[in-house]
Image (tube, rainbow, N blue to C red; front, side):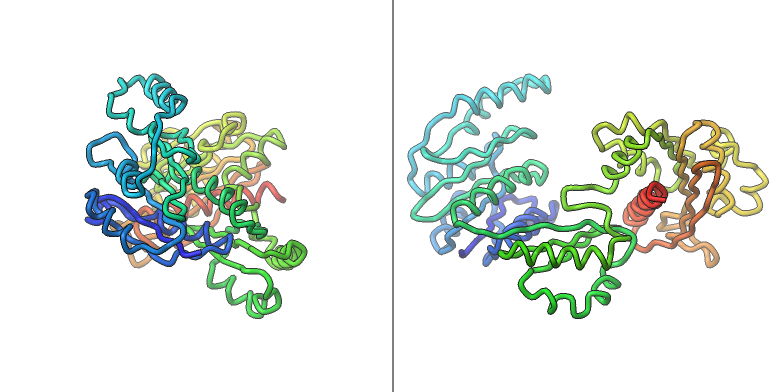
Length: 401
């Protein structure tokens, strides 16, 4: 099936916004055996839509962006006009948009009405995170998909599209996977020498992110798929923390809740990123006790009882300070697990002996405090993210002991 993804918006053309939607859409379609053959970025100009649609011979055309209520959001009406489709006002969608505005306490303008117009016989993709619903419909024997631009709004609709396509095209593919942490992609690939050839009936695709990654297995042969995953798990079980629907923080919160344990954090260079990641999980309030951001030496002394001499002799970024931060946190919070982070996130502050990226961790559990040292690469945000993921993995492994 020839597939085109058309991204709409001057902000993408000028580089102000990175086109992450293309990568997400292409990856999800590839998992069910559909490859994106063409990707185009256009401005919010009617003629641009017409020019692209005139020469686009793709059977599946996906638009992202331009579904909002403003004057430059013209995707819906322009694409419908191009295919000369009859439309109707969906009163249920209009009411949902009104409810959305009522919920956030903002007056709904008349311009939002256009977001409730759809081609007849179209499939409406509801938007619970914004005001712009998507749609799937037919035009000139092509399947047309309209997605909003914001990735967090688009992603749930993409899942609906995948379900639709699998049913429409009678795609009988099975897709499962694992999420991993604590190892590197290059190390994994070296360990997988011969693995791909051994499981030739299964498509195996790695996807890396900062600090962790996932492997997705896809095949029309479910038995072979399960055998491949079993073989993979037996090799790398120490790094696997869940399936594709899991998150590292979600797994930790679940394990803490199951064992009736609570956790607290003390952070310096990560500035609360660890705590924020944990509380992203619904239900974390039952296991997450408190967080202390001790960015300055004075704060470490005041709130965690870190000794002034320890700071003077070893410096704030040291295993000794990480140790006292975790131990002090455990005492002042009475948490089952107390974890500390102190490091140099950069880009300044590094020395020959203590380079940018150097990070120390302390973890107290059952009266025992241990320290860990790592040097992370990347820019300031990447270092902080990698430190957060590493801390989460320390907690995960501690809970498995």
